[in-house]
Image (cartoon, rainbow, N blue to C red; front, side, top):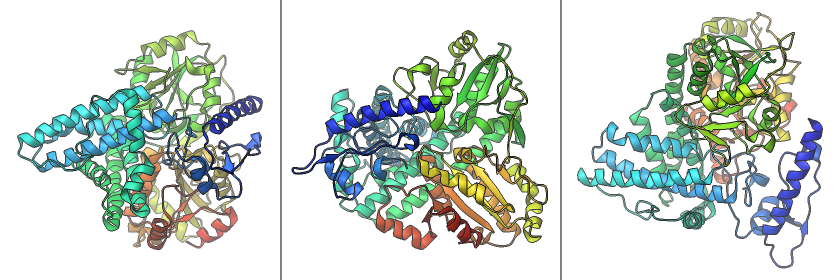
Length: 623
């Protein structure tokens, strides 16, 4: 694996460097230096930078007319912006088309607001609501790389907007004013849409706003709303849709369509995203339990079982259930991957005997893990990476996920996947002795233990409770979260959720550890979709101890790799709750301006992750 990793990395870097060099226009008198690359620890692609300048400023000046400008994820190039090709692999063309799609979302949102003002019913808004969730979800990091699919969303959005215009007129409503409201892209060709995309890129919109701090708040709200839409899309899959929440989402995007320099209003808009997302997470928690049963602590096998097999990655539990039903009696085993690991804790899913275990780790390792898996792979949501040739013909997407050249499943029909699984070699033997991980510490399982936790805190068996959650990623700096978990005192309780847990749940140092009262030391609360569990536990413990969440012996170490934007939504929810002393890492969002960051520091004491030992010392003191 090390040899494969080194070979692929060198090849990718060579191509990327040549591409960047060919597309970089340097100011007169500047020369280019090549970055020295250590392939053993590489995490991001190198940049071509003029000598003697700040990295971000140099990158900005070096590419005066960037092919793209995307900074929605934590791993954005130079922690500034991807300008030639995305670190995620997204092409400039796809990125530009996504900019057009988000502008379409804003235009439709303006009309959706006015349609509701005019008295539109929930049924009349249903199509606009559903389109908004799917189209926005498709723009999240590592969801859809297929430019043609993005274009379809744009054209669909234009048609739905026309329907909203008719509703407003028919009900005697007031049409929204401005260029964004009057947007009409219905007759544009692909090339024309891409050309238009450059006029609504982040630099152009920021320039039109005329205030970097105001536009920073627009971006914060936009990326948080993207995450909220993704969570709401999961709710919709299970038949849950809240018209009031959708009205709020359209309000947020409509506010982002304005160039009004309204700092207070824009900050309130960002916090409203947090409020809406809290309601969505609660709704998703209810939908999961109603559909698949109450999660319960469960041991999950993480070693191979002999037989034909299919791997399911992503987050969507309904797709997993559908596949399990269709594979029943076929002799094909099903494994989960990444954020699907917590699926094993739901009675309605683990009742299927051929759901035999979990394979692999977090999303960023899929190019190696998918290549070695001896059967087809289905990716239900983020995160998907552009595949290697070795497994491209075994990879399937579904829902909003899309990659050019990858087969897309429609109408929940997995027959082609099952047929291919039966023709693949499968695992040749069962690994013995088997290894296991324990999942399922949803708030419904943890709250009955609240008395134990409180007694353990009061008796000195638990010195502090840590929440380490969020998204994982490929940067070397993320080892911070491994080291943090491993170096924390043995009498600390660690709550975790999201794929960030992969940084330490496999640690030999931590496996099987218990506290002095016999409780497991690490409680896996689920996917990032299960963030509501952490909120419930924190608020209920605060009630039991007659204090605020901020006064709990709880240190929030939130791994905000806003790769993807779901983590940004969860952060805004925590801020809306008034939670303080959150550490973000491994780097702060590129889209937060210095002045906006000052506001967040002053009001919430947000801080970046730093030295592990230094941070532990501070957090053990509640700082």
